[in-house]
Amino acid sequence: MNVSARITGIGSAFPEKIVTNDDIAAKIAEFGLETDDTWIMERTGIRERRHSDLSNPDEHNSSLGSAAALKALEMAGKSPAEVDQIIYATCTPDTKLPSCACLLQKNIGSTQAWAMDINAACSGFLYGLATAEQFIKAGSSKTILVIGAEVINTIINWKDRTSCILFGDAAGAAVVEPVEADCPHRILSWHMRSDGTLWDLFEIPAGGSTMEVTPEIYEQNLHKVKMKGTEIFKVAVRTLAEFAVTALEANNMTVEDVDWFIPHQANLRIIEAVAKRINCPKEKILINLDRYGNTSAATIPTAFDEGVRDGRIKKGDVLLLDAFGAGLTYGSVLLRW
Ligand code: UT7
Image (cartoon, rainbow, N blue to C red; front, side, top):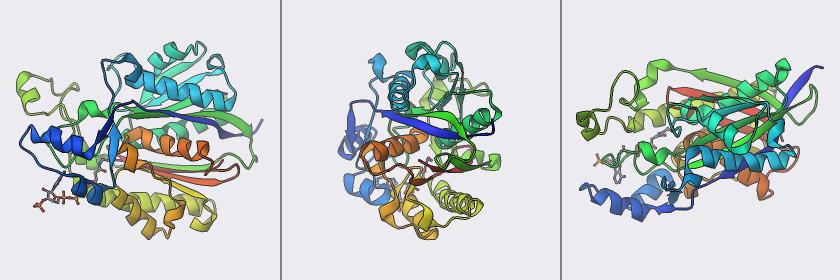
């Protein structure tokens, strides 16, 4: 059968603890740094975010991913036993080995699946969707779980006030299944790209195989996020706008044909600048950044899930998903729900 791929279920999960901008200000004051709610709101649009309590096993990355996956499977009307592939996008896995994908497989009992993690940072969920679409089209998988999940509070450098304000923990998941090739409700296109020459705009220098975390490295916080915020901001606006237009042109559509624009949620000013470039009215943009911050690979599936569950996204709506992240990685997916 000539097939296309469709998202048939979507779900999300969050840790309980809310961290407000005032909480962040109090935390960094311990290191002699200052920030405040007004600065964070005006420069980022973030009011609060969630941080996992790692003493609670239910709030580990793989546990949040599992909770989101079960909700997505329930929406799709599928059991965990029917899942034959798991693609787990994260840059903050529970452990380096095994993968979060295998832990999720154990948690939910998808015994017939093969499972792997991918690391494309904030673009991970879209990279995962593109990968899933190809396995579905090849006919080799029938029920794929794509997860975007992070416990990113674990890589925050609390001595860097430009980055520590941004991030939150969350998980989002989608079920991808085959449909007839011309079914209107399908992934219409995907476009992905990376630019490794920009690797140093967002990095964690230590903890991989090139730099062991010694007491000296630990003291310098080199096992935490190191970010060139202003440079990323500019690249993000350019690439998000470019890949949004690429998706629309490939489908002979304009922004008017799009019901919902779901961009990566890194900074409200980035989203507004992109919206201006592509002439997208703000009423069409799904935002959850104000309540959850930048949850990296989880921003797009969690905003998507919220829109579906609160009824804003209706069957037949055209959704434009658009991401950028460390690597650098970029990409867009256009689909009809
Ligand atoms: O998923 C990818 C992850 N990263 C990103 O997407 C980051 C993208 N970049 C951004 O979102 C923004 O560049 C930031 C939010 C990181 C920074 O905003 P900005 O408007 O680019 O500020 P800036 O870095 O140019 O700093 C402006 C001023 C500086 O003070 P001076 O030099 O003008 O006196 C900073 O020291 O704001 C100061 N500043 C702060 N003040 C209060 C920087 N961080 C803070 C803070 N609170 N938290």
